[in-house]
Image 1 (cartoon, one colour):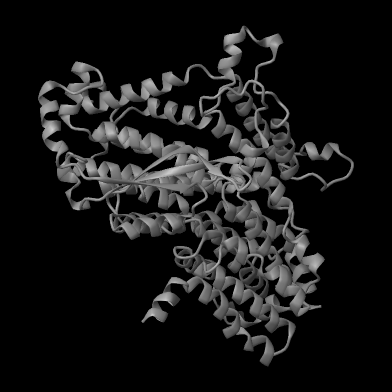
Image 2 (tube, rainbow, N blue to C red; image 1 turned 90 degrees about the vertical axis):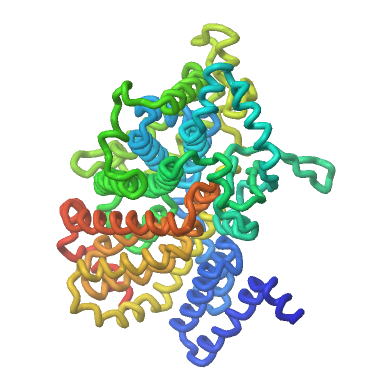
Length: 639
C-alpha cells in the first residue's frame, strides 16, 4: 500500500519514464525513418496530452531524439524553434505590455460600460464586446484577467441587498444603524477564510487542482489584481514577483445564498451569465486577428513553412474572413446566454429608459462613473500606446492588401518584409520613447508627473514607455518553445516520409464530399481540445490534416482554417483554457453551468465557421480548386 501511495504521488515521473520505454519496440522492431519519427511524435503527443512534463519541456523532445535517430541534424532542428511568428509575437507582446502598464485597458472597459448602462442585457452585450475587442490584440488570458475584476465589482453592486444600498445612500460608505445591528448578529456566523498566494505563471490546470483539493467549488473568489511580494535569493538579493490571491471560504458552499451572497435566484443567474460570457467573448474575439491566439499563430507559421509559395494568407485576408464570424458568433452567443440565464424578456433587460432602472442599477452606474473619473484625463503614455496600436494595425493592413499595391511594393526586393517586421520595429520604439511628455509640448511639471504614472501608481518619469523586465513578465516563452517543437515535428514528419504515409492511410475518406471531411475534422478537434491544451491540439493535428488534404486533393485552407478556429472553442470545462479557469475561480458558476452553456457556444461556433468557409471563404481564398502551391509540395513529398 505504501508503494502504491508513493507511485500515485509520483505519477508524472512514472509516466515520463514508462511512456518512452513502452513505445520503444516501435523503432526497434520496425527500423525505418517513418517508425522512428512516429515514435518521437507519439512520445511528444502523449507528454502533451497527459502533461506528465510541462508543455514547453515536452516540446524539447524532438530537439534531442531527431538527431539521435538520424532524422534531422541538430542544427536543422534548432532552426525550427525560432521562426517569423516568434518575432511577430514579441512585437505584439510589447504593445500588450504597454496597454496594461498604462491602464489603457481599464479606460476602454469602463467607458464601454458607461455607454451601456446597468441593465443586465446591455451589460452582457457591453462586457462581451469589450472583452472581444481586447482579445483581438491581447491574449485571451490577459483580456479575461483585465475585465473580470470590473465585472465582479459591478456584480457586487447589482446583487447587494437593499439594506446595503439604503445605508450607502444615507451614510456614505457605511450602513445605517438598523443594518449595522444586523451585521453584528451575522458576524458570528461568518465563515473563516484561507488566503493562498499563487504565482501569476500558474496554469489553468494548477489552479483547478488547487480549487478541487479544497472541495469548495462554489465558494471561491479570486482577486485578479496582482500583488507584489519579494522572493529572497541565495546571494541576499530580492526579486519582486507578481502573485494572485485566492480567498477560499471554509464553510459549506450551499449556505452562501443564505448568507447574503445572492439576494435571489435571478441575481445568481446574472452573475453566472456575465462571468461565463467574459470567457466566451475572449475566445471569440481571439479569432478575429491572426495574432489573437497562439493557435492561429501556430497555424500561420506551419502553413508558411509547408507551403512557402502560397501568398493568399496574410493579416488582411484573415481579418476580412474572420471579422464577420466574430460579429455573428458574438451576437448569437449573446442571445444564447441571455436566453439560458436571463430568459426571453429582452425588452426589460435591454431597456435604456431611466424610468425602468432600479436603485441597484443606478448605484452600479454611479460606481462605474466614479471609477472612470478616478482615471482622470488620458495621459501622454496612453496616447502614445493608442497611436502605436492604430499605426501597427494600418501597416499590417496596407502591407499587402491584395486588391491594391501595398507599401511593400515600394521596395525593390519583394518578400523580405512581413507583419513581424512591423510589430518588432514598433515594439522596439517603445523601449526608446520616454514615458515623460517632452518639455517643448509639456504645459507644466505637474502634468508631466501625472502623465508618467503607471497602473501601479508609481512614477515612471525617468524611464521609457516599456522596460525589458516588464516585457519579460508578459512574454509567453513556453508558447514559443511549444510552437518550435511543433515545427520540429512537422519538419521531421516531412523529411522521414511519415506525413506521406499518414496521407495514404486516409485515402478511404476520398468518397466523402470535402465539406463532410472538414466537418468531421472540426468535430474531432472540438472534442479533443476540451481535454488537451489548444497549442498541443493544433500542433498534433496540423501535419495530419495537411497530408489528408493533399491526398484527397482538397485545398488545404478549406480544412485547416475551420479546424484552427474550432480548436479555440475549448469552453466547456475549467481545464479547457486559462480564461475558463479564471472565470470558474470567481465562484459564480459550477462545472455543469459551464458544460451546458459551453455546449451551445460550441455548436454556434461550429455552425457559423462552416457557413463562412463555404460562402465568402471560397471566394476570398479560392477554395474551389486545388492550388498549384499545394501541388508542388505534394510532388516534393513523393520524391
